Length: 395
Image 1 (cartoon, rainbow, N blue to C red):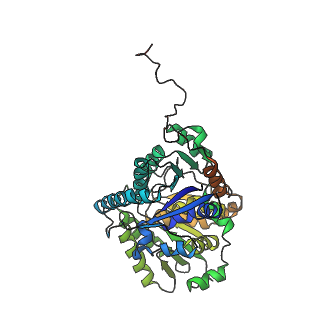
Image 2 (cartoon, helix red, strand yellow):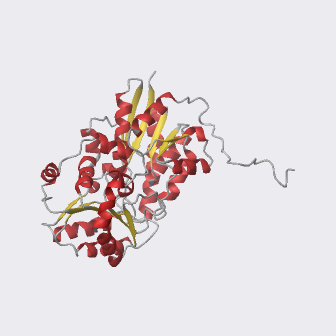
Image 3 (cartoon, rainbow, N blue to C red):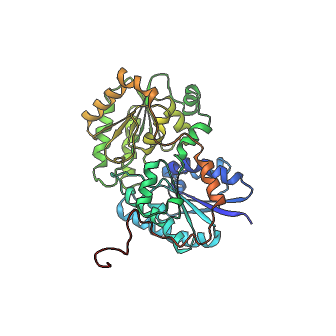
């Protein structure tokens, strides 16, 4: 009997990181891939990216509408509730042997909650990381404590997951699945990318992706500071991708769209480029600017300079090609100038990535396929270097 593995995805970025693993599972005759799609994938406002999943040849087993037309805290919390209700029935229908979750989003937390109540073992990808500027940080660690297998992107992250009480023999350093995609997709040439976007890429261009720092309340001010800084580079073209479905994301997207409308010859805006065009843009851009995790994980593998704006990615392992700056116009401009300097550019070919060198998906699939699931739900807390039952009160 084939082992049934459900993969849950709610956003374009998450799907891009899961794509290779989904291919691996789907191609294995001893495994059955089940695809659960929800969140921004089903929203026209965020590009209705479930079509990309189907265009890639995957059968979507379940589509769950749960995203309210709101990016307030109340709206997000209600969306989580809808997700939990819907997933209760979905897991009852699918009855997977394993559930694959990636990352740290609120939709993913709902999936983890539903799975543990259904007694479904969870395989969690990208645990142990830190992103102090976003509520995702707490969600990620919460999912770690609900998960039974852990696939992390570096040895440092592996140690963090073990520090959270997870058994070392269930925590695997496999690198980042994002690197797999760079190696396997066959990225577009600069000319083919320009034709695909119908946008002039002859001049140098920056790639901009900015998401709300969800533990801070002034995302609008930050994006206005970023746009003001970009005004000082009139000869540089810009490719801007939309923000994700987080608190404050809708306002950011409106400001980005307005900026593109006011600068049509210089600025290209798209809610979602899709992974092929996005990674191709990353390969050919002169500089990445914003606060996306893709700039932290994938960009160093491509030897690209990065200006990381604000606190959203604070705490992540960062390669030498990444310049952190505050979300102020003057600081952003200073960081851009540093990134474009001949001295900084000369260092880029020697940049080392923290996140592996590819084939993560194959490693994860092999472990999930062969893992012994007997008794897997009975998790024990792994203590590091002391015995819990010994101490002053027990001597």
